[in-house]
Length: 382
Image 1 (tube, rainbow, N blue to C red):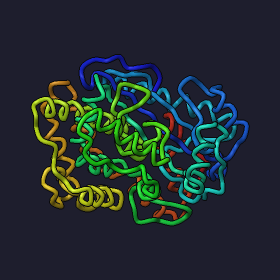
Image 2: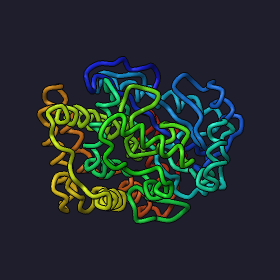
Image 3: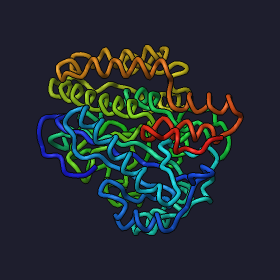
């Protein structure tokens, strides 16, 4: 995310970051191009494009936005910028959280000190980090507010995850998951949702305890599903897979912001933090990663299993007043219904595979969902 959000009302600003795989334009295989990686590392691909931990990845970020229209326009522009920047190398950006058949040996670690330090600390876990995610930053005025929202948002994170699955395949196998990225990432001990933190000092105490334990240097090394950002005055939602369709990415950003506004008001009113066992939260997260929108989800309020569409529409109903006040309800409700009708990217990728029997068809489907208007003509045919 470029620029620094200024302190202001909760949710006044938001920004989106997306990580992409880089695939060969002709074969759609993961592409490790040292020249391209060097350009990304040096910041020469464009102001909104940066290198990521793997040499076969890049990250884009929007500017600081205030409206959903700005998010949509800036994210579309950043995606087009990424496509234009890598295509001269014979490469296309793939906005899905796993590549369908690539293995971790197909890429290297980008030679940036932070990433090399991760390899030193985590060994094979860092070397195998061939997954991509979407991060939404929502502006908050203080760390205390960010922690208050974080404590209350944990039951909702699995529903957000279920709406974004784009990683059904891993190393040539249909994993049976909508978001296998979530399971792959769960091997790290600093992922998932934290337990209740209480306030800013509680957050600082946890970060310090993890620093003493030798697993983080600072809060920027936390890979929680949501975390207070060390770099910006924001709460950063990190739970989602990358959404190939722009509509789904905008929807995710809108729900993250509305949840932040609603839960901040509840915290200010003294509403208690939901008392949910960490085991239940882990189970809810697993279920969302496993089934996406095709089965049942754990209801954030009751802990009961409900059909996924009911959980999604229940979340929308809970946010209705806030979204209406912001002038966003009709747009968000329409995006929700389209997602429920069409399914997640994982669903569409599987359908493409089943039609052709070819994993490359799933990759082509992602590229056509996400690319510029003429993407169909620029993606190689079967």
